Amino acid sequence: MMLRRFLIGACLLGLFSDAPGACQSLADLAREERKKQQKAKKVYTNEDLSKYEGLRSPAPVPTAAEAVTSSGQSAKGAMSTPDDSSERAWSKRFIEAKARVQESKVQSEALQTKLNDLNLKLLRQSDVYDRENVYGPLIAQTKQQIEQNKSEAVAAQQALEDLREDLRKNGGPASWENSEAALKPDPKETKSEAPKTKDQKYWQEKLATIDKRYNALIAPLEAERFQLVNRRPLKDGETPSPSGALGLGVPPRVIDIDVQIKDLNQKREQEKQELVSQAIREGALPGWFR
Image (cartoon, rainbow, N blue to C red):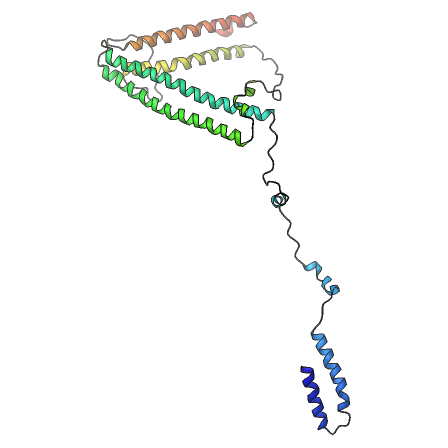
């Protein structure tokens, strides 16, 4: 359109011009104008575009999770095939969980028996002075222990149910719940240990183990005896008084406790004497046990 207007204007100018070669130069002017327009509208070829190939942004590299997901596999990966070690792990967890459930049941029965005995003595123990103040605190304490034991029993049973659900979700065999693999020695961990030298330290540790076991049996009896005699529980850090002369009106349970403690101490000494005899037979010196 612009070129046409330009040519018409040029022809009109030539008609009114006195120069003889004015119309002859129109073709030259048209060619120059066409060249200008071609420069203004440059067409880019593939060769031109290839010059800018290096300036393009690189294509985003997919992450590992995206690559796995795009291939139709789970991002979490397939669960590994269970082996003997995993069975041992589940076996250990179930054994411990069931032991807690059983322990709570045994403790519940013991506490209920104790409560029944205390209630019976509160009603019928006529030879005990001020029975209500003697047995009342013990009954209240035992009831509190029973309630606490109920909560622990519920928690232990729930933990066992949760463990069963975890085993199901992990795809383990249901038989692992009753597996005894954890009770057997692990071949991967079993190592031949050098026999310990049976010197004085060795035998003293054996004797200390006996004392520790019997002290654990006697401690709750001493605590109960202290509470019956003093009508209050032991305070933190307080040690029970040793058995001694008892006054009038002492609960009969105290006498029973003294008999039990004496019996346990006798068994302790007998077991220690047997250990000393065994040590001497195996080469220990008598002076090690003085």
